[in-house]
Length: 210
Image (cartoon, one colour):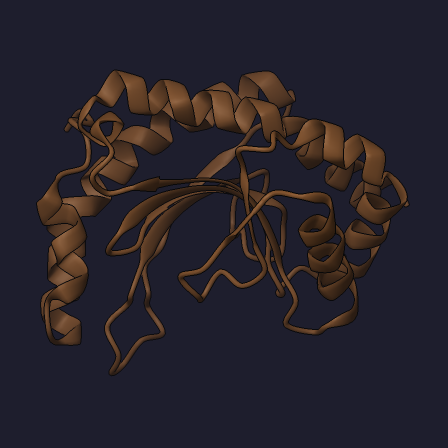
């Protein structure tokens, strides 16, 4: 299917009771949209980054009881997985869509990446627009406006705390008209990731040249 925007029904998915019932709705309503969006973004990012990028759509396979509160697609340079690597995310909670460049706690090189970002903090600040948001935990529906203090403290936590994470990008409220305009949403997503590619490349260089 082609991507036709995100609708109220997509967000209502996360109010469906029961693991099987919610997973069925995610499968039917959201995953086809992720596939369509992901195909476009994977090609775009591969071209701009200069490395082959691969699409991964969350399966929530480890869940046996609690239904997922959010779902997402991820794009990374690694064909077999993404959690241990820097990756781009597009996903939904029940009240918004998120667009992240994500460094989550599974990354074995998180300390080195955080230290590089802190060492190059002026470059990082210059790269991230003030309109962007920062999150320190991908499992929680919370994020903070981009500013120097939040950025530094989140990177220090990412470096020093085992479960520390660093996600940066945009959140789009579910009632924002852009979500119902496929072309406008895709353009915003492409533009968002374009602005974050320098950080992705810096992290990639840190991992593979250190």
